[in-house]
Image (cartoon, helix red, strand yellow):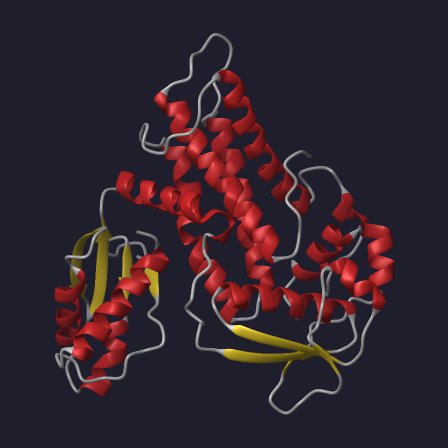
Length: 354
């Protein structure tokens, strides 16, 4: 069970309690779960009972008890405890089961892993100036929101011929309307044509989207460096490396199998990042913050290389492919899928060879 799955499970429990008249309170639009802090109990914690206690006219611990009854038997949840003034603390099933569920979800959803329908009832309108960073940011925000089920319209003050080469295509041109939300990051200080000529579309989009909207976008030649100092290269190289591992395994006559063997401790950071990925995408959509996706991809790439170096997915020398190699390959392939999907949401290609 991923954090996004757990959030949906708790929200469903709230709806059931309200429908069954066990709880008289408005159903929140979403429920937030967080990893338990040091010294806490369980894997995740949720404060929804404290949020609902006032409207329900009940003590928070009583609300937590009502919800615990409806969550505890759900698949993937090992134990639910009530802690403090009314926090719900969740211990998920055995790590091997959780890890397999994450990898199965990635394999099933492919590059759409992390997409959902949490915003399916939202119809949003955005508007941006005739400026390249605003245009690219609006396009990435549209991609993120659409991936979560929202319907999005983007307008712009005026058209620029070069934007099509950056993957930007506003729905309408003209002045801002009262109902529009204006997207206005710090301007790039360069035109789309200049950036395309000097950097190309992928590096230009990364350079424009990686910093937070209120920060200046560094658009120097470092975006083209083929080395570890360039985060874009590191992310794309990690993806290419995962694809090379799949090709190498095929040449050796074996394929991935996530259930083949338990994962070594160095795999834990990568597994946790993959489990958190749906939540990161939803948060990036809600906050209109593509930079969050870029930082997530950097973290996944970093964790992948650490895992790869400590636990090689391919045998070496006279070593024969083992169950450990098949499970490691499954994790590497899942990392590559997440990297490709995240880059796609930013409008950036993920080459299989680099």
